[in-house]
Length: 238
Image (tube, rainbow, N blue to C red; front, side):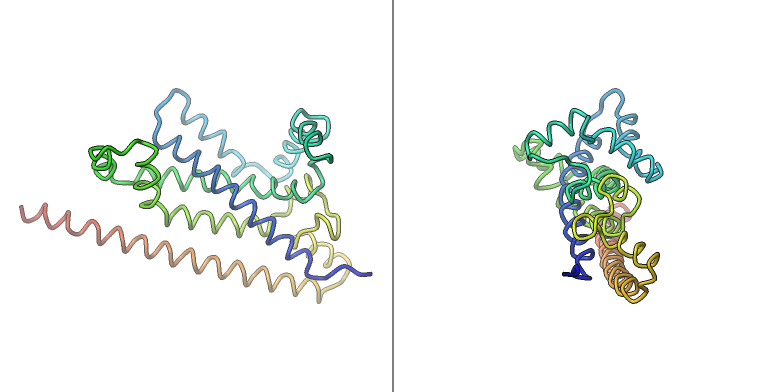
């Protein structure tokens, strides 16, 4: 029985969704740490965490194979817990998609949280709110649009990841073959109709995500401008 031709796209959507959720949790946590704490080596830690944004996919894939392979401590722990290796599984595809998702959301989260008006946080503190509560109820809601936009871009990038996924998850049809890998295989095999179908679907999804991201960015700019106007008017007319 032949494989369902849209299975790679469905797998890519599932992988990208799970990877984006996990990246959002880790990236926002990292952004909170780097924006709210001052400690020795903070900028170095930021550089290390965001290093995947600058490294080639083959280098990142090699690092993941070394860190998560069957002979590594993490790989042995995973196999002991779940009864199978992590590498060359759909879970490995999720990890590959998170490689760029976490640092991109971390960068956006840190920048957005550092732009939050300190007066809002001091006002919440004067009302007795603890720091975790100030972050959850004041800082994150104010910074939500840039963070959400970064998460959507991370989803789009995860949807089309190729190099890192190929190295750590492999290209196993019906199991770890994502849409980007299926397109490559289809082009190599001369199955242009299948390749064009997947290309059109990915392009439409990416275009939709970029449109929504632009709308969020425009709304953020309008909101910031409207918030700043009363302050400027008060300064000009004391």
